[in-house]
Length: 466
Image (cartoon, rainbow, N blue to C red; front, side):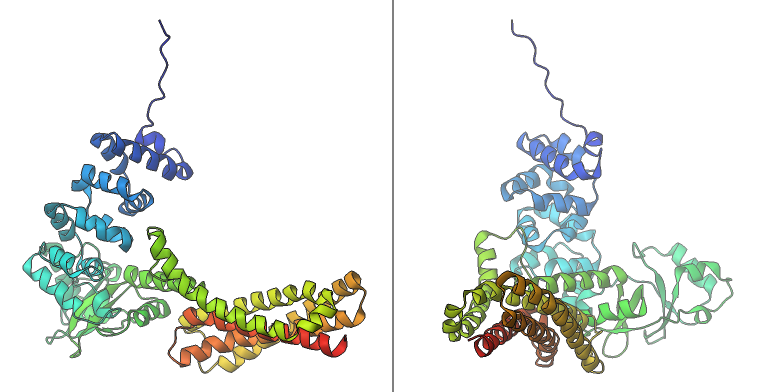
């Protein structure tokens, strides 16, 4: 008789939570196992304790087949918060796979701004499916929000808010908040409005609760009060929140009437998305790309800017070809040439990244562009002199040709100055031309640094060494 083989017990949910570092790896493996075994109780035990953002992250990490099987096994637990946290490329097929009653229940749980964010990029058929799950008044509100331009405050705002007459007292406001049937799940201010529904100020909840009941609300309004036009660009809204340290801001229509409110979480999401887009664009990657994209989608998204880089590289190669005889007569030039190009490319990328980010955050403006440009040129010159001297010593020791040391030192200074100048001026010029500097700066800055670097190094070598 064969001895019993002790089976390793499956880790419990508590054991999976043993450490944050092992949580993702162990829980994802356990979830996939539960899905494969069609063990619905086990799946619920693993997913129920998680925050909606963690569930969404887990769904994104597994394969599309595993995702489909998970939805079929756990479909009635997919709520609105999880849907709103999912990446768009994962969310769309998931919405299509959910049963109508599950989708309807999930959508009804969301605030209006989350519903708008959910449906604005979907196909018309899916939009109709989601809007049909809403109550009439909610559907009208979402459809109205969708009528505003993309990336505008009207798309970003939520309609759930607390608006009170401007002539009320603290006591009246507190009594209203305590007895109102429907209030937003979270709100930071009560907005004071005129009889024409125009916002005139807002009061923070902390100030409201700490003031005497007979105190007029107008006496305790916040000095940070700002309103946002419904058609204002969401990037401008995010800048407003960041610049004035706002927590919420009322949104007004063309007549100045209150139509919604934007809260700090939405504004910070916009800033985060813009930062991510800038990083992707600087690398020449499609801003809509994600890890869930197919090989074909990823290839197509990157090929365009690789082609642009190829063209600019050919231009730089033409400069090298013009000095082919010079390189043939002194092999040392071919050895040192990549150093000049690499230093120029890195210096240009450093300056360009700082410039693009400063333009995005409005730190770099027409009023300080000359001062900032001069500073970057000065930094480029200092670094050029410093590293030019270093490379002069290396070249002299390596090849024993004093004039070659002089050539690479001067070329290094000229290249780093050109890199700094191109890195700051090109993004500014593209911004003036209404071209996204984050998207288009890279190839142009690379071309400038390569052409100047190669031309300076090989031109000086041709004049002084041969």
